[in-house]
Length: 268
Image 1: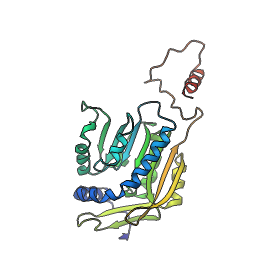
Image 2: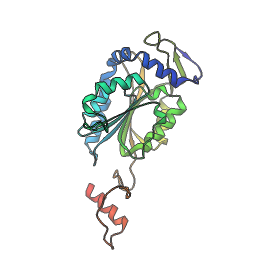
Image 3: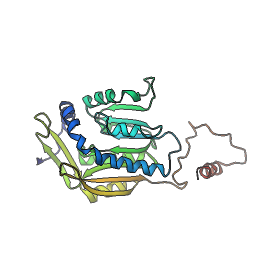
Image 4: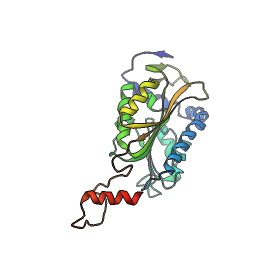
């Protein structure tokens, strides 16, 4: 393991490595399952205290082959899941492993969308997701891109939505291993360290609900974070987009402000 400058072809090499070691990685990562499921369960419990008013929509960054995390997200009642991974092989495995859930436009339950590619190239409308899950994935981005992604995630979350992710415990611009799990698995990680990561999350407009240094089964510690999207003047109500949401015709004497107040009151 060595600390060096960020390679220019870092994304291509990460993709190539995960394509090459997909099966071996999926077997190895099973030991991380309890900790990841613990944090998914925590977010489910937080959501249950204030259930989404519409069909829940989750985003998973770094879904791998699907089970167990994507599968767990799909267990949330009526949830839709958008799952992304940079590895072509992993996305193919996820599509096969989660076939029963169907993808959008596939004529099935239309609860799952799989997106292959660099997560930094993803684009979604603001306030799209009730929760974003990023386990062992943001740490593969160069640090500056981690900062940018946290900002994007903050915008993608609905008011009161949650980000749950793990980050590097220590400040490292670039850590590279020429051989990680196998001879063909060059790998890269980076991180800002605990204090700066938490500061970046707060500066992005998220409220840190929980942060903890936890050691996984391979004796490596990470910063685990649950952060909540801040709410506006109407609490965590999502203000309707008048271009797309059907609504009752406003009475001539009912102002838009009073109409929004009426909607907010109904949600209490």
